[in-house]
Image (cartoon, rainbow, N blue to C red):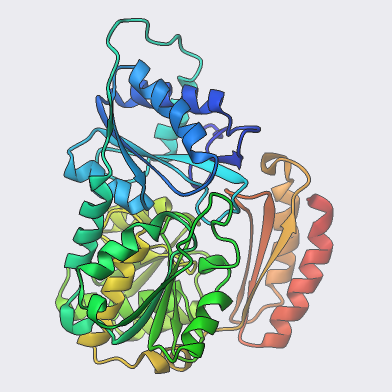
Length: 441
């Protein structure tokens, strides 16, 4: 299949008002999406960035000019749009967000009628139709303000929580992003409302999304949990499709540990597909070992929660996710959902009679280091054949470990992952590899 020019790992993304993220591009993408899907009913949501209204105006102009009825959910998590697409029986949806990136970035990602992200082939087809002549018929679609979709989504997430599983002291870090409106509704519809519950980083101003908070700056949450003597804390990213957790000591429970907990819980419940878990190439090798002890097979796929979902569908796995906190439990959601994952994690801890405080020690991850090198050229111009040759040379030096190098699909970075049983080996090889690969960036 041909290389996509606009779409990356998670939709189209760039600095807002420049490059691939201008109003003109948004207008063209809106038209192309409707032409490709033949959709007549779509849901659009945004995060809290200052550029969202600008890009939303252009995107929905393109959609309505092609005859689509557009339902504006407003500020809502990406999985909230996914939920709304299915609840309204819409033909698709779009989210204007750059997820974990700083406020100066923005992006557009599209969802199908099943509420899931589009495949590479579908995104390529949208790119191919960008240059087609616009619709000139009088069939113009209407735009509907639908803020009630935020409440509907949050109430749905609240309904997933076993009320006995709510902990008496909990913090939620909204990253000044899309969950800022949803989390208060969620709390009000669960036992959290009568407990020692704290909601932080929800005073968004268009410029502070992900800034010193959320999953991109976990110390804000971990310090808060420790300072207030709380049992647990949940941090989301800008569009709330990810979650990371702080235990009461302020230590971070990542996606790998969450998958280990949920995998055991789903198997105990007898959930279809609970004998397999899909992870990406970035997940720690300790996860495979732990799941194998439970009789659960581990399948690996490329980075990106839509690749996780594709592999889940192909293999029949009921659970999949990323170390970064994208988690998909197919019984409950069709896309990464931070709020949903938080509720399921609490259910699992309760039902397994698990001690959150002991999870990190028991997991015992392999030492792992991720080094990011900044690209000074487009990622498609990086000589990956030469990069891979050097990686293969070093792979032979790692016993019971691995090296993985890739270009980021959302940022101008070359990512170098080294994992091995000994910390000294990890640090030494990471430094050597970074030095040798820098010339390719």
